[in-house]
Image 1 (cartoon, rainbow, N blue to C red):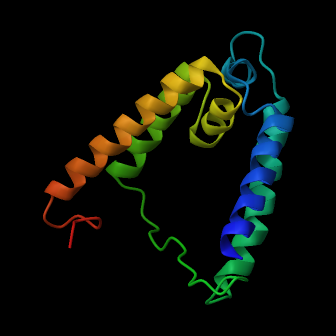
Image 2: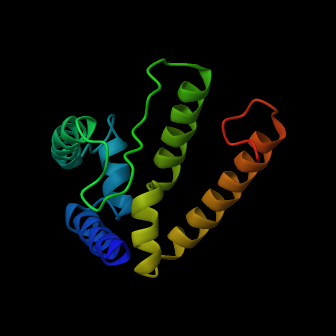
Length: 145
């Protein structure tokens, strides 16, 4: 049941990204072009996503297990540190250069968008490099056990 539910959720998410234009790099770059031909339409998409997520997180905080019976694993960190700021900067730079972020890049890859292939390959290399560096740190939260 979990796999089926995950598949349906992924399909709905992907369809939402396509319908909203989030899988189209030109749309994203138009939104990020504040000094030129700014396209504010994605502001409404993001606002709607934040509103839905806020309600979902408020409900989730009151639960110990998901609707499918899995343990709830919500973020607990509250501090803004160097790693958060650095990661946010890298994410924003990548988003601004490519017009993709991880979810929409996978949708665009499924739509056979050549730019998505390059982005996803670079994303996987970056994730793998981060994983290798983190595993070398003795006090890392993802340190191999």
